[in-house]
Length: 282
Image (cartoon, rainbow, N blue to C red; front, side, top):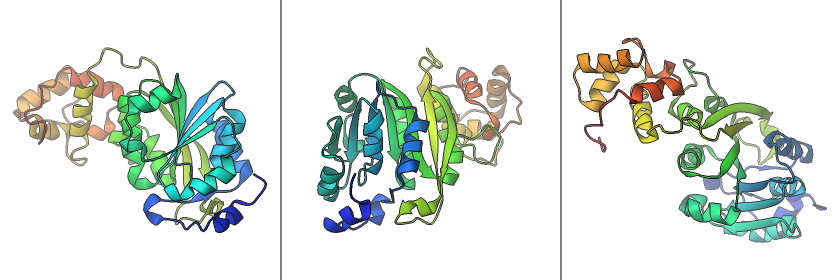
């Protein structure tokens, strides 16, 4: 890009929308570092969610075989035309990724792909879980979010940051915080620092396991963080204490354990001994 991003935005009369969590990166060295941390090569197809003004899209296009970007803000059309319109390996789709059929998205991408996204807080969990639970061809996610959220995604069992989304990630892969991004690197500057988390999908992890039942167990485990897990099991599955304790014992767990101390493997083991939920909508 031979013009500053700021001048391009001004030229097209663009105004930032808080509702979309629009904070754009302009530091080319940092953008290149994100692409490097993502592990993108000339053989990779990249799905970018939230192209913004196209600075990261451009950086990705220099390394990737192909970039397909989804951008919700139609007013960025002329900006993106100017910033990445000449990139022959870039295709921009205007629309909400969460309203697209994932099978259609993956068909467009072809084979395996890396997902790269700069996400506002409110959409982070829905997008990550949507792809974790439904994507068939994804091999990695590289997510830039608020710093505290990034560490939550990669938290260890038993830590205060550990939560249901951490277990959800660990059921399909492993997460690691790979880069910190100070707030002053963004335009406009947000109120918090950000960080990049890389989630590597492990093909075949927990194959043959009923993940629906495991996810029910995870929701149960984190339904009341301060309570012992046995109490959550009693309330969720509508069973007496003795039966709930037997489920934990059968899975090799202490009856006093709390949900936030269990690993993904623990939840997989436990799910085999839990009954069907008494009320799926409850």
